[in-house]
Amino acid sequence: GSPWSLERWSAVGSQGRAVLSLGPRARQIAEVTGLPGAREPIRIFVGLVKGRSLESAARLILAELDRTGAFRRNTLVMQTSAGTGWITDWSVDAVEFLTGGDCATVAMQYSFLPSAVSYLVDRDTPVRASRILLSALLDRLDRMDPADRPKFYVAGESLGGYGVATSFDGLEDLLARTDGAVISGSPRFTRLLRELTDARDAGSPERLPVVDGGRHVRFVSHPDHLWQEFTGMAYANGWEHPRVVVAQH
Image (cartoon, helix red, strand yellow):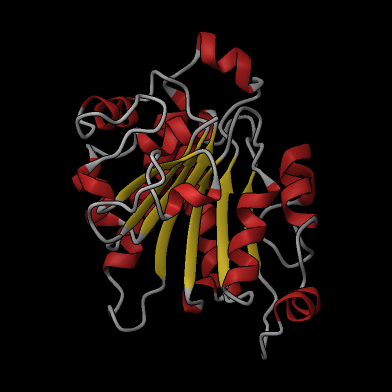
């Protein structure tokens, strides 16, 4: 959306303009965290343009990643948006503070429909868009030297969480292809989360299922649940990488 960008400011839509213009700058990150050498975070957003395919949008994101030097950052996050391109501030901001700005976040708009309407009439496009962008990013990352490749995370809230979770064939696929995930408030029809809930450890509740003693996946409705299960007891297994957090309402 900048004067140097390959994507026009007018093309990113209102949600895209919010994503690109908000969030902390390097000075604010340094003030809050005390981290020396804080960097300007990179945010890349491509809008939904009439006549442009999702595949073309994904290629444009790759071009913007190259233009901005985003592949040289330590952390790369793919956000799957909800509805008309909405992404939660807290999800993007948190990564930028935690990494000292040494990160890039990418997302694209895939619909003109509000999230609630998409629930009813279009559950395919969020998944298709997420899979197309995921495939493009992983193809590029797989061709990079592992020593120089950024850590790769995926995230999404609501319909975005559904889209990103359903882009993988299952938990093993998600763990094999990413360094971690944050999935928040996804609908009950999200297949991956339903499978994890059905396979939960005996005695754990559906609202906060414990999966394999908390080894890779932790369902949380409170920060304490990152480190202890619903009973207040420590998880049976240590939290190994990659890590997946499922934030439940």
